[in-house]
Image (cartoon, rainbow, N blue to C red; front, top):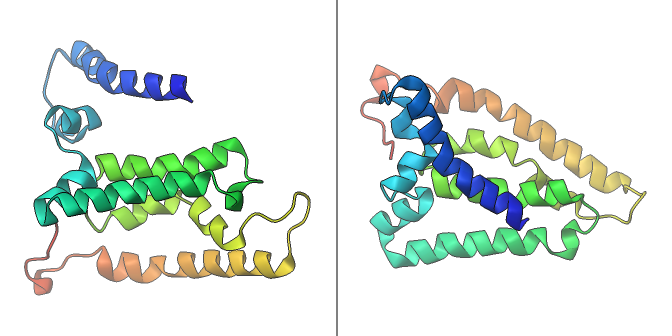
Length: 168
């Protein structure tokens, strides 16, 4: 796990240097949105937004959310999940907290945090999946998928009648 963290941190530093060498140091619009640009300018996603909105209380709140995700990933609720699923469960939302700002598109990004819905089912004994828990998981998945229709047709569309939308 430590090696993975070190390789990931090194990649954040190596990628911009590599792309600069290939593109001849051309600054593109995409480079302003990169993770390394955010780190270099001191913007750390939700932590920065929380500090700007409500001060250190917000930063502590986001940090407690990180601790909660790690604690849940290590708890008995996830004991029968594979290491990859438990790691994804904790690390992907934490990654989003660090690199993504507070915006409505975060809901779309959280679709990839599918292990969070597995908490509803819990961690049944190996080899058994109680029918009631499986039914709950299927129902939650179908409802989540159905909620994409109003999301795409209403929340994702910005019209001139809507006026100036609030987007952080």
